[in-house]
Length: 185
Image 1 (tube, rainbow, N blue to C red):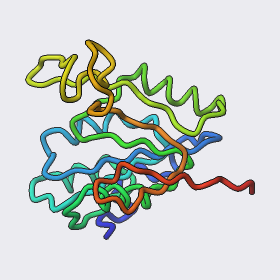
Image 2: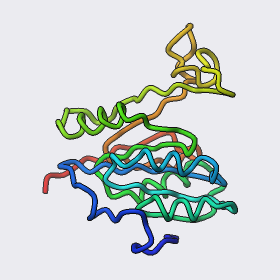
Image 3: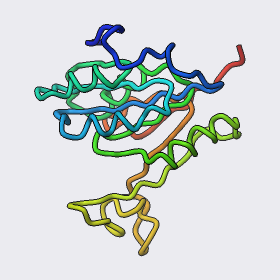
Image 4: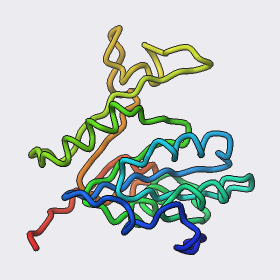
């Protein structure tokens, strides 16, 4: 259920500068008031920011309404249906998922925007993510820099994906995607 009236949201989609290719970013959050504001403030490069709140009882809803374009609230015991609902709420041709404790640096935001604006012939991109635990960069093991260094296994790697409109599968963990072909207007 959408919880913020359009007049309450940070910026309506129509008031942002529109690009040739629309980019939606979604953030799924559960009690992330401590991280959500900083995350959402770094997403102004997107045409639309969708926040899905899963049973949040802290101040996450107020932050999401102040800084997001659309805020959806619900109960999602499994990751797959939660991610599918967030993605379904996105209107962009390209969709990027960002965790509430992740920050998109300005250089990465510019690169994402530039690649989309150039219309490069790709269906998805892998975006490098450095994983910090307690301020320490993890190079090997769980989430270790995509598992690309120190002989880490890519099977357990943490990867962030930017992709054309795809539909999350019925997989409860939401990682398998079925791509939907885009038809010309």
